[in-house]
Length: 185
Image 1 (cartoon, rainbow, N blue to C red):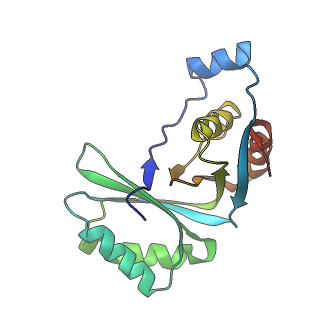
Image 2: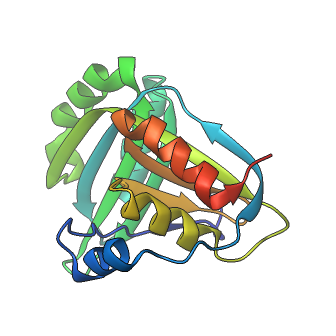
């Protein structure tokens, strides 16, 4: 991951949120579609969240080294440090690699200082490639998904791509949302 990459913390919008209620009641104005150059959809994956110590990158580096040694392919990664002195790491791995990944992490949890581990099978990633560094793509993506009841599990972006992880059962609805918000290639 290059220094220009960064993770977006995605906070859930409560289904009873006042903002969401107002938007549904009055209807949001139909904004002009934003042109994008491409969309990629992943196969079905497994999503994992780990809480690691923040003091240095040794735990993270050791974890990634262990996964690599077992030939576990990481399809998505984002991390952020929080005020509690820990780092939250989100990963997507191939669905067939979930069991060996969990076994490896659980076996090494104490040595790596892992404080918490959760996982969810049946996740997908949609990656959007903005046209000529077009502004407001991430905002439009998250607003459109949330208005339609789709909560991202995680997201990240780099200078040329925005990726969003969500449960795979939301895929048809998410693709319809993208068609509403973006001028597709």
